[in-house]
Length: 367
Ligand SMILES: Cc1cc2nc3c(=O)[nH]c(=O)nc-3n(C[C@H](O)[C@H](O)[C@H](O)COP(=O)(O)O)c2cc1C
Image (cartoon, rainbow, N blue to C red):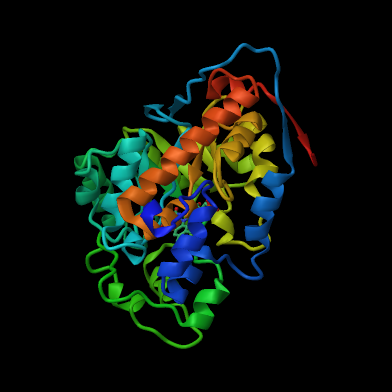
């Protein structure tokens, strides 16, 4: 990817990977990754909210070589970061999930494997990465149990259940494009899961939405979460929480972490930016479980913002798909190395010896 002989300027920010990805991806795949739901209000709100978080740096702290290591559910990581679960990574690059998982391994961060991965969970785990399994709740409870058993047998270190997709948000770009998966990209972990539906292009309809509508169970409840908690010996994370009351209830249910997320602006378009509700959630769970944030994180300074608002870490989404598209495993490794360097600089500039101390920084909303 990086060849100065071609006059190529290596990315100096995660945002730089977007243009590289856009140049190589089919327009409908770009839209599938980039788009949000409805008028993309929640998508835009994520960035706007993070930009409004000013962090008060501490001076004279004597920090010259901060550690970026952090404690995440299940253990220590090189950064307070995990790779967000993202479906169908073979859309971006032929090497797909194993390439991104290998990059996560090299960076020392967990990789969250989606239920809708285009590679079997066993092959993803074979990269040696710390893999967390992301569960979408399926209509077929036996299939849910089977997926959990496979994830456990493959050595997944945590389970992350996504609770904000009773149905897919109305993603207008995908509908307009009549978006359907190409034949070589399949839901590799859902044998017999009506995969055919995701491949049938129809003008005005997203085939991915039709497919998830057929296989996802819309009415996930707290009783289901209790069932999942009881059968999950590894750390359990709940992704897609925005209301502090839900966060408190999840902590009561004994989860190890909540992920404050509006799904990158892809679900309820009226949802708030995840950064704007993070402080309420942190207060509501009151250290009973960890709190992670995603949606809109685009660099080390955003990680610092999340920590200063009280998060234990973040999930990084689209920038890693851009990097995967631009350069496969090497691209994703470059993006994660850049993020680590940015975070290190942000910690030095704010006088923090490590991510844990960044949680004691003060913030001002609005600059
Ligand atoms: C292309 C794409 C696919 C996604 N697939 C999943 C998924 O399978 N499971 C899930 O829980 N979240 C999924 N998400 C949401 C991400 O995990 C994460 O919440 C979101 O991307 C964070 O926002 P960001 O992209 O602005 O960083 C997906 C997001 C994108 C962009």
